[in-house]
Length: 184
Image (cartoon, rainbow, N blue to C red; front, side):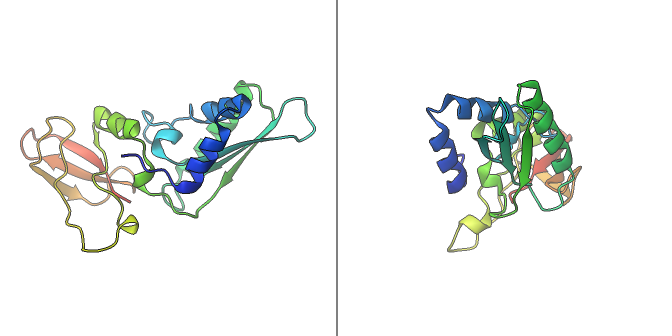
């Protein structure tokens, strides 16, 4: 289940009914993650807020707030540029993109649609929820399902894959390697 952080959920609900605000959110939600192009920044859960404000121009200015998947994520500069370009194409000449680190991003913020897109793309989506959201007994790691053949007979090859957010696995049945998007 997609569990957005409470602040983002409040902001999305406040925008409902405000067509200008909804349109601006929709523009931001078209921007894809440069490392995993099948995911939008909304699917990934890093899109936190979109606000329109008056800066004296004929068209409202836009401020977009995003949270990186981890501090130092190299994709943030590309996402900032892509957001600016998307809003410029949509007729918004003034765009500010703010990066916020708190609260820290978690895979819990990924949408169910985003998780399904990951699997269709050949990346095993995160399984379970982040440890920071749970209290009580220590959780055990479960097997990672192969996105190619759905086998649970998989093995981690290396903790760090093509990006820091992913680990490299191999399926023992179909013998295909695949990325697993780690629970963070």
